[in-house]
Amino acid sequence: TLNVGDVTSVTATATYSDDTTATINPAWGSSDSSVASVSTTGTVTANATGVATITATSDGQTGSVVITVTEVVSLLSISVSADATSLTVGETTTVTATATYSDGTTATLSPVWGSSDSSVASVSTTGTVTANATGVATITATSDGQTGSVVITVTEVVSLLSISVSADATSLTVGETATATATATYSDGTTATISPAWGSSDSSIASVSTTGTVTANAAGVATITATSDGQ
Image (cartoon, rainbow, N blue to C red; front, side, top):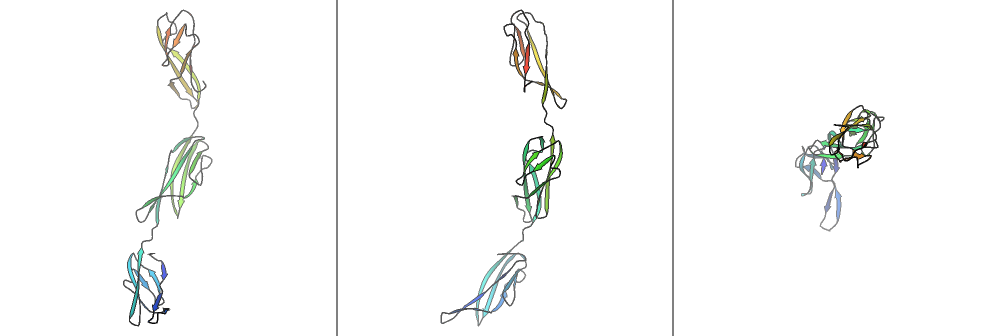
């Protein structure tokens, strides 16, 4: 079996009536020279896909061998995917390269990986991407002259800076209820209502449920607290 453009050598061995054998120089021929041609010295050249029979003829005897010629499969393109394309600083993800070949097949391959800006996102030889700083970097996969890529965006790690607590009412009579709400402020300047761990400085005066409902139990003063992520 050969690919188009390959060459190989064929050899003819004669067997004689006295049971001896010897390599001979026969007249070589091909059933289809457009598929596989053969020289006078037995060099076979694969010219096109198909099947050809190479024959050796000498003193009225003929022997043959079948040559199968297949297409040369080439890499047409590479596509790159990532488990995640948006990362925060310090996070990692895995990129995968998929090759498409001229015979229509696809396969995962191990390319040469690169990054347009390793200070933002670096990539290992096995395709592990590490987010190093905020910004955008293009991760590329190269193999056999073809290149594919995926864009990775890195953002800062957003942390919780503070929590403010408000209540529908801050003065209750025994038996009344109020709702407490916790609002978080983050390092990127955004705010959001959160579900913290609620607590009371004195539950005998005012208790608070896990959902922020405050119940007045006795006369006095109690502080309702909301805790989340160390704040």
